[in-house]
Image (cartoon, rainbow, N blue to C red; front, side, top):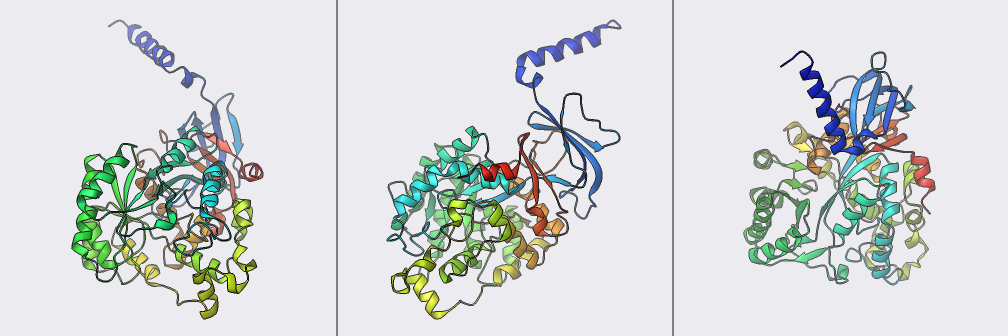
Length: 472
């Protein structure tokens, strides 16, 4: 090969690559200059000061000291001096078919005389563009919806097509041990299954829509046959695994969580809340390499709304869907004798004793080396899409996790739930450009995580203030 042959061949190969992917030649370049870079993937590592991040198209091109990483000519420059850069947040448990308002779960308490459920569902479908925006405004660049009606798949499609939406992973209707007819408008989010054969049939229907997960709502009541229920979970898990996807399971009791893990659960979407986790649970979870999503706030959200005590946090006032905020005190305006039964009973008897077992289980689960991913169960009553992540992470801190651990749970570990840990969760060359720029140090407090200056998803830069102002 002659002296000039190799360089010429390299040039021709590069030109051929450009012609094969013409969009790459015109990729927009963004330079985030002079910020302090936080590394959640490096446990205990200090933040890196005066860093420049170069984004080309939808990927991070380079990361380095500002002194040796100049902004390319023609790049859009974001001055990040005095600000912090980190991966975008990931919420590993949400539900788009629910809004967070008092009317979104008539099976929990029936307020349909105030707002008919069909009207609530129609609102949620039509309001998806606003819901997407509040996630981005809150610094959340990916969410995992772990169960809803078949129109969940349309929500995922809408997110892909939207100019302002997080990444969305989806499960379809929940394989359930119990029925919820109050939620069935012809496209039920929860379907009662009584046998492994029926579980396989439902899985087949869902797999035709290419879900990211299959989900089981494992409700075990006194007198139920746990072994028979476990067989249903296993049938669903086998179908998921044969299709190359994972099984997510709602299992809030220790025995039920163990049965779920034996049956093949890859993701436990809630804490164990009835008893302390034990050695058997730890062993099963580690053997399955399972992910544990605590969802510590969601029960309190229901209680606060039903008692008339729910008040928006400063982050929710700034970032939540204003339409939902206007409805959060709707029950307070209803005469007590006309309140839904559960709300009336709560207001008469007072606040129930708080459940702290889920809080106490978080530290032992983490210390055992089980992957913990931050998730809110957003959409449930009182748990709003978007800024609910800050309530959740504060409870994680109250439960004993450090800020570096919480950031890890909300980035790297969330990327594992999304099935994208090779492309998301860190700010490194080659990774997808999903990151946030903050006005305050996220290693110091959860509140600082809500101080989002810019959200960048797939290389597109969003101003949270403009996003929220665009929501009507």
